[in-house]
Image (cartoon, rainbow, N blue to C red; front, side):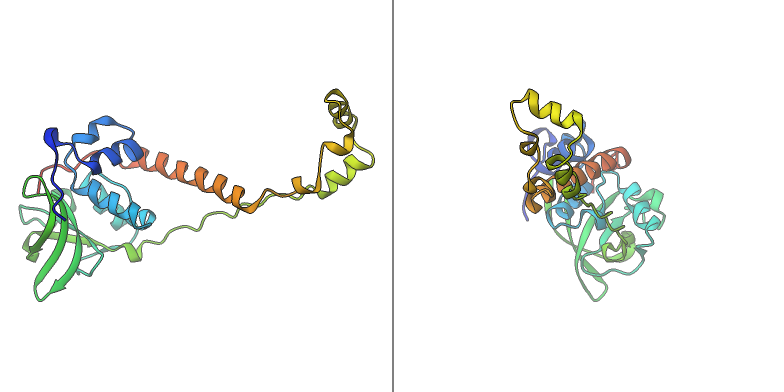
Length: 220
């Protein structure tokens, strides 16, 4: 709380979004209310349930598409505002996160509010269009990744190795038996996890960059 936009409209949230999601330096100085929400979701490990957006209207439509749009607030919901009082997604201007609901007031955490701040606000419902509920976003399970055992290949090399394998071993000054070893049959679990995690993360970032362009329309 209390973070303030730097000179030239630079923020750490815009820089994170520009470097990791949009791959576009223009976002480093763009209005940052929704980029803050995306950053917070990423830090909380909830990127798939919240999405990564800079344009508030597109973000709201994403929740609607995932059957996670509601007119009732709850802690943890992403709250969307239209300063005109409109209740239509196309008129959304601003976004934040619901911290708690007390009576008829919605307590929020918002970025790019009061011009340049990240701070807590208390809002009445007259300017709220609706809420995105991360808990209702269904995330597709990742396809399992398996490594085929090569024990049979190892046995083949030790016994009747293919000529190509034997030739390769001979050119390297090794015996055919040295080409494979039992430890080569399966990748170490830690290495496999690191490789798969890196690949999946890269795909997520590329997909987000392709689908979540744009920016928050007006400052809240």
